[in-house]
Length: 308
Image 1 (cartoon, rainbow, N blue to C red):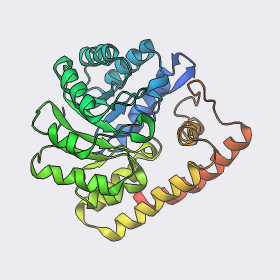
Image 2: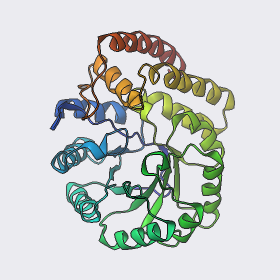
Image 3: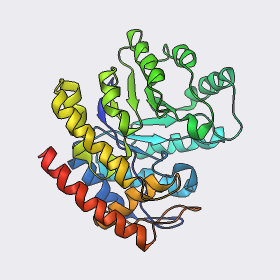
């Protein structure tokens, strides 16, 4: 199911929860249908936006099973296996393969920071244990360690690694990643922060793993297509709307969890899924929810006019 390279928008799904260890299964199904109908190129679960490290292993397995079932092979399902425990990453990877997932994604283990030689050795130990294609996930703000460009280059010869998702927000680093495509043109390079999606495509990247696509998949798909086709007037107009989502929806809360809270709150207002958050976070209170309702109404009107 995985094209090489994988191009387009691969949303990092929020994880619909109805309490601290119960999946909102009906909400997940509605979310999957929303995204596939919106034209996305794949689904990425158990990532940062999906609150992956906060989910029990039992719940992660249930999420994998249901997502693969709901996707029905229409788009690839990529499963995050990032963990501090090597064996647990392998266990989730094997379960994902059994459930019908298409690829695996992992960031560096995120508790005690490892050096680049240790990180490279870790990946070399991990790969033989994995039953599916694998993508690197660069998320230094949360893992404290980056996949440095030299480390990425050292992994280019391994056909089991299909690409990298970069959430560093560092465009110089992203440009250097894209230069690696000279040696590995089948590799995928995807941008995490949606505010940089346009820049990423213009730099030679293949698309984005953008949280806002949970809510407005057509917007991000349209932006990617416009940038890829060279329709810069349309691309810049759509980019301005993505910035409106970032500026207005993600800034309602005061803490780093505000982005996920805003997305989940908006999706619950849309009737897609519950907005329960994994501990230690909580859903927006009434005051913030009312603000999200106002912002969402304004965004929907502008985006509908732009992507029709």
